[in-house]
Image 1: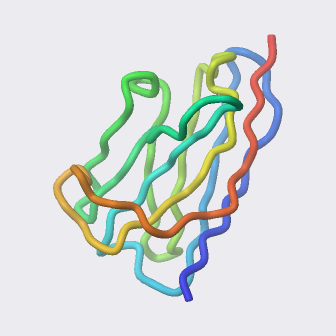
Image 2 (image 1 turned 120 degrees about the horizontal axis):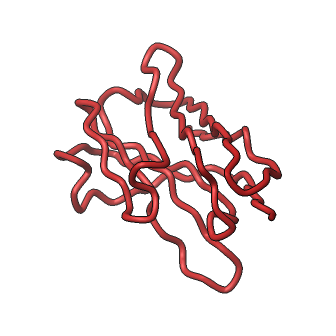
Length: 123
């Protein structure tokens, strides 16, 4: 059974940083695409960043230059380092895993989801 458990969310002021973690079990991180998504109240869920089996990362325009996705295959853990946080980054952040991999996770469907961790950025 695949399980994804996020942690690291919280409240931070504009310009601050947070590091999200996602620990997985039931499968192997190294051979599939992993990603971070977020959903703000009243908005659709959006992909923030993803990383493929070769460590190649993709970022949403809103995350480029501020967020860094990484993974530790030995720990089956996915990370999202978020710096220079903005008010509009406030959302529930979800970790997700695919059952396959493709370069930069292009068009790869994400089928497994964590329960989410809340990130709140205030002024």
